[in-house]
Structure formats: C-alpha cells, structure tokens
Image 1 (cartoon, rainbow, N blue to C red):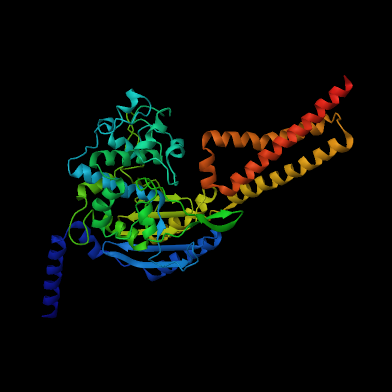
Image 2: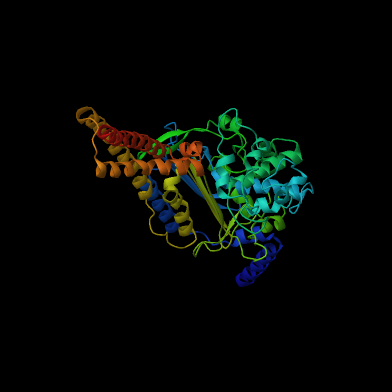
Length: 495
C-alpha cells in the first residue's frame, strides 16, 4: 500500500508539473544551490570589495519567485550601512529594462521593429537623410544603426538642470560619420538608446520615464525604481564613489533627467531582483499578469546578425547574449555603470536562476577590476571558478604617472625660470630639446583626449587623471615657453 501511494503521488506530481507553464515547471524542479557555493560567493565578493576599495555592495541570487539569497556590506555615500533597501544607479543595466518598455509598444501595435525611425522622429538626421531613413527600431535596439561608440560622449551624462531633453540632443548626431550602412556594423553606444527614448516620447506623447514606470517598472514590482531626477530625490539616492588618487570619494551625485533609457535608472536590490524574476518568469508578473509574452522575451535574447555577412553580434534587443567562457557561455547578461555606481545582471537559463549585483564605486580606468565582482560571482553560482584577479594597476599607473609627470614639469618650470633670471639667455640645445619633448607629451595627449572624448566626459569619468593631465600639460607648456625663450634670447644676443 505505501508503494502504491508513492506511485500515485508521483503520477499526480508529474501531471501537475506538466500542466504548469515552462518557467514554473523548471522552478519547481530546480536543484537547490549548494550552501558551500553561496559561502564561496560571499567570500569572493568580499575579497573583490577589499581589492578595489569599494565602499558598499549588495547582491542577490534570484529565482522566479524572488531572491533566494541576498547579502549587503559596507556603507553608502552618506556613511550609512548598505542594506537591501539602499538605492543604487544601474548604468547600462537600464538598457534591457528600457528595451522591454519599447517592446510593450511593439506588443500593442504602436511600433514595429522594422519601422524607420524617421517616420516617428523626423528630427533624427544621423548620417544625413539617406542613412537616417534606413535606420529602424530594431537597429537601435541591437546597436547596429551605425552610430560610433564615441557618440556616447556627445549625448550622454548630462546632469545639469538646463540639459536638453532626449529630442533636443539628437542634433549632436547630425554631423557624426556613420560606421557603415544600417545593419552592417555593430557598435555599442548609449546614443542608440537615447534615440529610443526620444522615439518612445514621440509615440506616446509622454516622458520616457513615465512610460517606463507604467509599462515595466510597476507591473514588475519595481516600486522603488529610479527613472529620473525626481525619483532619485524621493529615494534619497546617496552619492556614488570615485577614486581620487586611490581614495574612494563620495563625489558622484548627478542624475541625467533624460537618461533612464541608457543608464540613469536605478533602485534598491529588491527592485533589480524583481526585474530578474520577471525575466525568469518569461515576462509574467508575480500577480499573473503579463508584461511581455514569452515569444517577445525569447526574441529579445536572440543575438542580432549583420547583413550581408550574417555574423552574430552577441547583442539582442537590449541584452548581451553569450560571448563568455563556460559556464557562462549560455548566460544572458548586461553590465552597467554611471560615474560612481556600477551593476551587473546575469540570467542563467539552464539553472533558472539569476544574479544581480550593485556597487557604489566606478571609474573608467578601473572598470574591469570593479566589474569582476559580478562576473566572478556569476561563475561561482553557475558551478565554475572565477577568472584570475583583475587589478586596479592601470588606474594607479595612469593617475600616479600623470601626477608624477606634472610634479616634475612644475619643478622644471621653477628651475627654468631661475636659470633665465640668474644666467640670462643662453644656448642650451640638448636640455632644451629634451625638456620640450617632455613638455609636449602631455599636451599632445590632452589635445587628443579633448578631441575624442571632450572635457566634460573626462572630468565626469576620470576626475583625478584629468586634473593631473591638465596640470602636466600646463606645466609642459610653460617649460616649452621658457626653454625656447632662452634659446631665442641667446640667438638675439649673438646677432
């Protein structure tokens, strides 16, 4: 009799599982994560915090029903302990969230993926009329519109009160040279998603942040999510940290009021976990509703292909797909950063689990070292081992090298000035050539950096390195002037 009951129970269980939607069935049969794997993740993340001097971090392992494990350590930019209720900015992790909001318009028939952008957004003139007329919604989502990566600096990270809105920034793309015809070149740039924000506003007649809340954030249960400057104030978003000569400093407190589509969305750990759970449920809300049908969710996770070559781009509709070494080769993921904050999200379809991780430190020169916390933790969760440690050596070499050069050149300005006063004009050809070359180096680097990136972006993302570079360039210019002035004076005396 007991064996008969067991067989009957097993049959009933099998029938129930067969009737469940695929996401729920996989959740019901998911093997538990071994406790030692969780402990290894905790230890690894703490080690990375120490190695990068990250002040505060929170992460969660997420299942279809929500977090199955959550941890937080350190302090926020106001010196308060980080908890699962501490808000962070997510950087480009906002892109799959924004893409989901765009796809709700496709779901409702208000947009089609292959609609030309100019049909809804006549102000979009990137690459001239001939090029712009061929750019589609799909191209923007898949980062194949031909907009170069450098265009990000022309339209993103505008945190002043008088910044133009998304539509007002499109003119900055008018004279940018396309990388190639639409669909032929993949180039990751936040400019694509800034254009999408303007497109959504044109279609809906509402601010992008409002559409984002109503279409994705609220249905997903992301009630504390940040989508603009007002919601950041409401959540008391603390400043993020940037390294200033190696010291984490809470100086990053700007929010792009029109940046939710490409990077300035955020929230606490539970908000980001809610989005991950929505994805593991294939677009179904916790209450049984539907943000996106499963076929839309699957479509977003298919990498785009370039025509005419057909090569896969590794980027879907807002998601990075694969492209990593096992055991993350099947992961669907994204990383993101704003000045002072960084985040990662990994969906592990084979395990029906996700990892979300937030940190309140970031800078371009140590991006790899900071982001490694998320990659390594995801590898451990997936049953692997983290890659070799990535250090902040590039950051320190750059900042301290430029600082040392600035100090040396400043000292030389004093020395050159004293020589002129004490000895008068003299011909000192070899020292003059050497010092002029030393002074011209940082000046040339500064000019190139300003041309490619711009002073605003350099100050926003690398404040200490930019300060040191400016000081070295200024001192180098003075050295060149004093040295060449001495040579010219010596020639004048001979005449």
